[in-house]
Image (cartoon, rainbow, N blue to C red):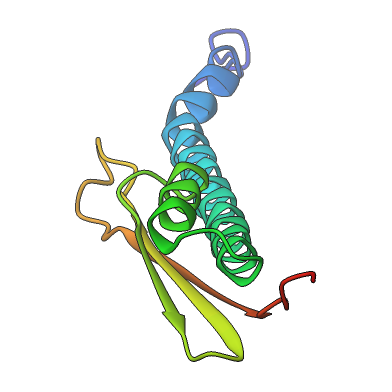
Length: 125
């Protein structure tokens, strides 16, 4: 090749090709992070539901009312259990957060759980 016919390769399109290769990875990482936020949010809701249920039973509300109130606060489909041993009330909330689906359908869901204990309040005379 002579110097007159040789031309340097152009870098045009290189950025587009690199973006096309990296973009699916960025989308996957973003979906994963959003799913982790959903798990964190569900865990906070489970803690709140357990605390609300235990406090309601401890202050004298009926167990069915307290469980219904806890189920409203808990993540959808959660199980709320109450154990009253006379001096203290224990509420346990267990729920499940489904996986992100789509390309991540093979990922298992996450289980969130929380437990709260409250001392039974004495009735005012």
